[in-house]
Structures are given as C-alpha cells and as structure tokens.
Image (cartoon, rainbow, N blue to C red; front, side, top):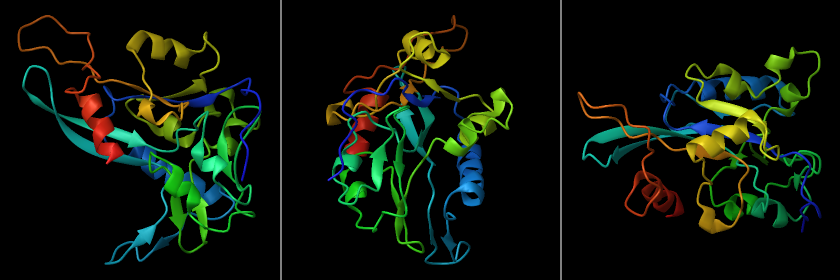
Length: 244
C-alpha cells in the first residue's frame, strides 16, 4: 500500500468555497471539464453524452439542496464538490500500486495514470465520493487543482489558479495556501467560520467551506451570522446526507 508523507507538507494548497455566494451556475464544472480534457494526461471522456445510457468523467460537480433556514423559510443552497486533498487521505493508503499519492511539497493528492490499474479501491475509501472511474480509459480520475496552471510560469501570476476559480462569476471559489496563516484563504476561514466537510471521518481535508449566512427578514437589519453547523442545521443535515 502507498504511504502518506512522513512530515506535513510546507504548503497546503487548496480551495475555500463560499456557499453563501455560489449561485449554482456550473461554470466551475464546465471550465474544469474543458481545461482537463485539453490538458490532462488523458482526456476526460464522454460516451453517448446526449442519449440514454451516457457516461463520462467529471472532476467537479455541483449539488443542489433545499434547506430550511432558522426563520422557517426555505432556501436553495448550491454545494460544489471535488477532491478535498485530505491530510490523512484514505484513498492514498489503500492504493496497491502507488498510483494515488500525496505530494510532499504542496499536499496535492494526485493519480499517476501510468500506475493506476483501475481497481477502484480509492473510490471506495474516499468518504466524499470525489473520485470517478473513466470507463473508457480504465483509470481513476480526480481533481488535480490544475497543477499545469498553478505552476505554469508562462502565465501571469493572477492566472496561476485552478480553472474553476478563474471562471467563477460570483467569486465563490478561492485558492491559496491554507498552511500559511497570513494567506487570504486562511483569513477567510477565520473570519467566516470555515469548516471541514464531515470532520467525523478524520480525513482532515485541506479544502474548506464557508457556511451560508442567514437572510434578514424584510425591513430588518442585515444579519451576519451563519446558518449553524448544528445537528438540526443545514450543515449538519448535509453531513448526514453525504454520509449515507
């Protein structure tokens, strides 16, 4: 089986996703598919995409939930999900060939498709459902944080970010080093109460989510508090849904 790095990486590159501002437009999904189909080691294939029995591989998906706010009103929350690049990544430790691995310099979890034999053990081990088998290629696919963009010095510094972040029209996605307490993403997590998805799994995901804020009633002052991550709140309910 594959081992995780002996020491924590000096950088933890990842995403901070703002559930308060995500509008569910799927721009991140489309830009991810387009970029990784053209730049990935092997294309993200689609089979019969416009007919019955279609199949294909996506590295990023957006789910929609109807949640009940504390004031009793319902609200649609859009929930983007891709690989969370966990510190204790179970997808890595179950891999029998070393294909799934965690980089020692920045903490990004990747799949070496030359070593992947398509056994699917990593998909079974991931509690977030963040890996997809490409049936045409016979290998597992996952988010790479667009390493071919973020380390491409031919691009302007402001363009060295994942395609999903660059394309988000609502600025709901943020990229940076979560090991750096002075980074913009770390500041967002502190200021907005960013949280780990399903912390009870013990995976310590790098990616964080910013909870949706409560909406003020008509004629009242703006409310800044977030919807609580309590057993009866939206975030607690979401954890239960994804754990089932």
